[in-house]
Image 1 (spheres, rainbow, N blue to C red):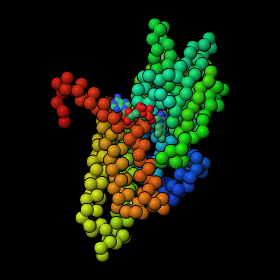
Image 2 (cartoon, rainbow, N blue to C red):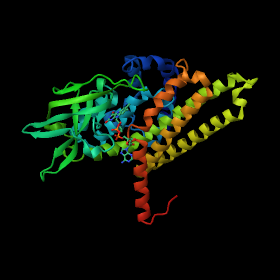
Image 3 (cartoon, helix red, strand yellow):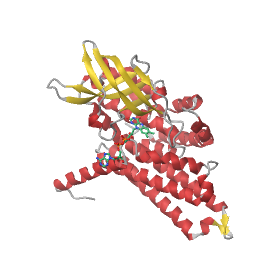
Image 4 (cartoon, protein in one colour):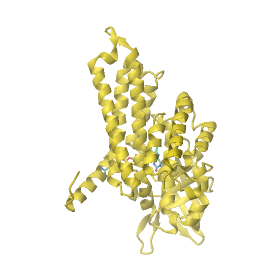
Length: 388
Ligand SMILES: Cc1cc2nc3c(=O)[nH]c(=O)nc-3n(C[C@H](O)[C@H](O)[C@H](O)COP(=O)(O)OP(=O)(O)OC[C@H]3O[C@@H](n4cnc5c(N)ncnc54)[C@H](O)[C@@H]3O)c2cc1C
């Protein structure tokens, strides 16, 4: 499903205006707060951004992947803190429910998620486990009337204000084997507590916290899909689109950084001319624009494939890898073009340089993307497939 082209272009323009007129002027304020300001959250709700990917039948916009990345190109232009909670909500948290939830679970939560009444979080990472998701130690044990969860989750985005948290935990199968299952845990469930937000390098305003489960009791209906062992599969189903969305936001941010750096270079005069006239500065700008354009093409191409139902496991990883590394280089060059001013917090480029660093780490590090891409590549050659 997709929104019709006319309605979509109205949405795209509304998002661009929201970013330009509402988010950009308040980036400093957002970074100074522990969580996004309430009035901006209300505007995000009104724009429908909490329902970007949720099915229409539950009140979502159900954008197709190409439309979704076009929204990402716009949203990405603002500091990633505001974009972060929209992505987690629509991405891995919302999509794991969409792909893995029962009809009753979807009917219960999807309308409230799509409207933004409930904000979603997704809890996989633990103190001793990040990339190696199969090794999580949080346990869910069966009780006569449901489940009891014990364990600790780490770095969970949206934790302080999430109304619904998808929690991955180990469960025991009938043959004694342990598998990874997912549970839908509502905020304020007894036995669950949220620790203080971490002090981060960047993306202030997008809090991350530990969540502790201490004999947290859930009803039987909390098991995602009413089936054990499907937790990782449901999470992975949402990850591809989540990775593509992050990549699209990196493209938007790279263009914004380039606009800032070019504008600065046009007015900053050294050796009697604006610094954009120096060829070594031109090289920094040209490399950045070329790489942003390459990433945009990759993202649009992968989104087109996803829009016609093609699996994009490899493409989503390539886009995430390239676009997050690309925006890191673009931010670094933008600081360089600003000279000493780029190191001073009066200039937004200083904040954005810190903000982009984590994009290479969460939702699968660059190294994990490389292992996924290499796995796809070797499988294709083992099948005798022609590349390109
Ligand atoms: C701001 C922020 C928000 C986050 N939000 C969430 C969230 O909402 N929910 C959630 O569950 N988690 C979240 N995370 C956690 C994030 O997803 C993890 O930090 C990330 O997956 C990496 O895991 P790790 O930190 O344990 O690093 P590790 O897995 O310990 O990795 C350490 C290093 O080893 C490398 N490495 C690991 N395995 C391999 C391998 N097989 N081959 C090559 N290199 C390897 C990694 O690439 C990395 O460089 C968030 C983190 C941050 C910083």
